[in-house]
Image 1: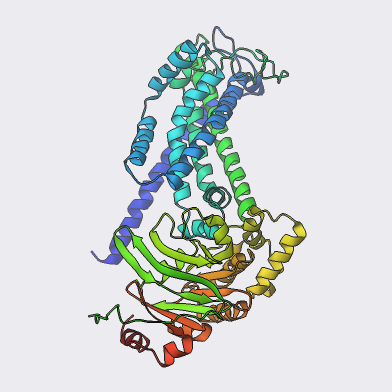
Image 2: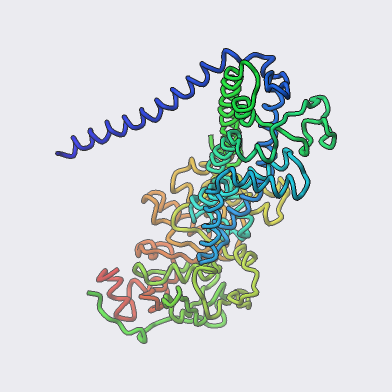
Length: 295
Length: 267
């Protein structure tokens, strides 16, 4: 077979594989949206759930998903940023560093149920925090840390050594070089990592059943005092997320229209994830343009 | 097959007390792990002159240059003395960040920051405590003029530095270094990634800059060394073999290894 034919064949096969992947994705998205969207209404999006049957709207759950994501990111981004910078810049190439890397990999392969039960026993029971947003956020941080740390480390390492030398040769400290010069260049990669891990947080159910709880107490959206028990911002209230709600409606729900409820909630969840990805990317691009002056 | 030359047979000039020196090294040795990359380099650099370091690849000239502003810290072990204003800046307790503000460096590949042209210059200035808007603007203009880039970029200071051509980027890197108002400017093969026209521009810039700065330039291009430098040091396999005025180096080299290198027998 000559080079031209080989090349043609390889291109066709690769195109087919890509088409398969894209096809499956489009089929899934279309299926979920088509079966779910007709049941989505304004009252469904903003309404409250009947605690007994699981029927009713998902307003609180939708908010909970975003709030939990926000809290998780607030906890995990600074930690993984520090760890990523350490691994990319400061860690020497020795057995201790490879031990840390292996530990991070092991952490990322923990089953989510195990993390959930661990969070339940430690935060909910032992520390007496109870089922709460904060317990859930800490449990999800365990998932996020390995993914984000690895991602930040790789994004930073991908920036050329020349840039570091330029910073150091101007008398900038290593830290200043890292934060002011390397980090802005690595930003798009880091945003991608944050988007990916956010998708996981949105979709996670197993770990949250035991930590953030399965109840969505009616909250007063006019009350923005985080210390108040009825406030949506209170991190110590139980908070069923959308993914947990879908699971619950399907397993324990007594609502007669459980199938429609979960289909509608799934559609909303997917749209929320897509919207979040879009916004994160726009924000990332905007920040990147601001710090690098590129068009 | 590379001819063997005696490392004992060297011709290294020294300067009398009347010549004012910008820097001087004494028994400078560099080790990469167990690899002895630089042996006993004793070189002195007269103020406001351009000194060229020439030699084949692997001769240790870049290694030597990078030691002068401690850029080898954490990469190689450097022993010996580096005298700068009567201070041995190779001592471990020397503030290396302070040193690098006085001894600037320009690298082989142009490496402007992924920032605007203006920000490339003012970022390090601000980090070093220069905050006044007027002063920053002044330094931007002065340094870009010094690097002969001002006329080309004065209307696009807020554009990304990465949109400049390679030659312009390298002159921006020179501007970025001289904006710190250093004493000494180290250049590590600054033109090796540039086309001939950009190279000429950088060389013209250097000739102008020597009025204000002491310049030490590593180059593998002998014509370039002949065009720009007043002193020239020849490195061979980690040894400084010959150090004389550039005129003597190219018209009347003293020792066989230099004669062969200049004649193009190796390297």
